[in-house]
Length: 211
Image 1 (cartoon, rainbow, N blue to C red):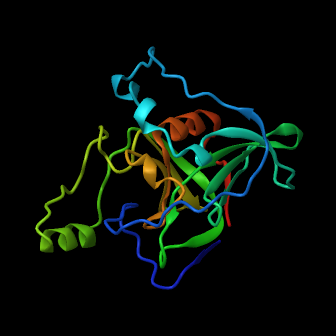
Image 2: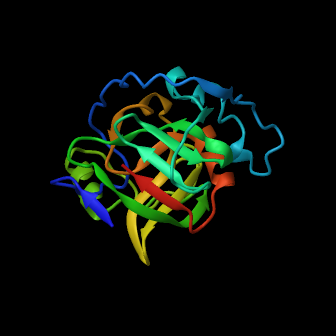
């Protein structure tokens, strides 16, 4: 079940409007700070070089924290006000990642599940976006292959409400400075290094709570 803000209209998970500066996060003591190590052995050459300059701002980098919750291990919890995504672990802990969330008018809350997972997903901008950008003199394609610069980044988790695709995604971004801001049109964006890490930890059917 999803609850949407007034005026919500999905625009393919991207925004051309200025973003808000990152909100100061709630201070939590990390149990373990997780390193961002380049993977020089990636099978897909597109996965190389996505660390380094692609890291999110320092307060929104991946850590393991104490996180008591009634949600079962393996559940993904997204706190849109604090701009954090939590992957619940055993023993009262969680992996915490920084995220970018929907700007004003594009916020939503609810419980969904991962219905599909894609590496280097294709991007299909809606016709409304194509027409709007054309009016501004910007020509965007009807489809973009998974590649460097694709607005969905290196990985995407497709969120479903039962059998229905919500059209919302948890996905990567090539704009890591947008992590910690209200920047998107409803999708949850992560630094590519983080969404690649999360992708390997979740599966189809994973419960996702957005609050």
